[in-house]
Length: 257
Image (cartoon, rainbow, N blue to C red; front, side, top):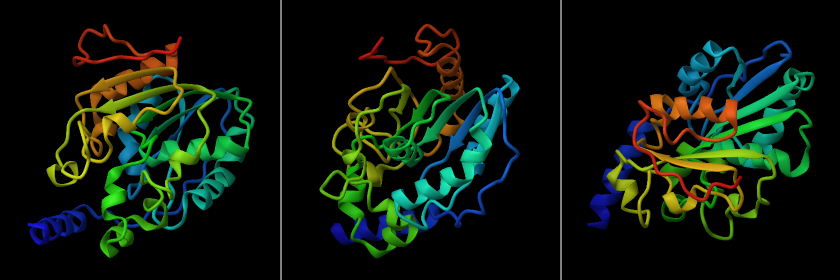
C-alpha cells in the first residue's frame, strides 16, 4: 500500500511540476495606493494575473512580483525579493500586500527585520502559518526536494519549521482559508480538514485582524471569484464581508477588532 501511495504521489508531483520562474519583473516606482502580489511555492506571477487584473480595475497600482521560489531558502528569497521591490514601493503613500501560500511567510520574514512605514493592509491566501504536515511526510523524498527546492523543506511543523520561528504579525492582516481539496493523496497526509496542502488548523497565525473560510482549494483559490471579492473588501475596509450577497457561504471566527 505504501509503495502504491508513493508511486501515485510521485506521478502527481511530476504532473504538477511547474517550470522554474522567469526573472523578477522590474517596474517603475509607484506612488499612491499600490498592491504587491507575492505568489506561492513552485508557482509564478502568472498564477496571480487574475487577481492583478481585478485589483487594477479597482484603481490600484499592482506589482505582480515574480521570483524563483524553488531556487533558495526563504531567507535568501526574501532578501532578493525586497531588494527588487524596495525602489518601487519606498515612495508610495500606501503599500498593501496580497500573498498566496509561502508568499505570506516571505512577507512576515521581511517584516521580522525591516519596517515598512507605508505598509497598509495584507491579505494572505492559505498561508502555512503553522507549517504543513505535507513537508513533514515528504521532505526527505528526492522528487519533493527537486520540485520544491530549499524553501519547500522549511515549511514543515518540526524543528526546521521556518513559519513556527516567526514572531506574531503586527500589521492589519486578513486570512482567507480554503476548505476544499482536489488532492486526496496529500490530504491523506494532513490531519483534519484541509485545502489539499495546508490543514485549516495551521492557516491562522497567533495574531490576525480577520479570518474567513471559503469553498476553495489551495492551488486554485487565487482564481476564485469569492476569494478575490473578499480580498478586495478587506483591502478597502479592513474586514471581510460575511453578508456579501453573491459570495459563497462563509465561516468567520476569531475576529480581532
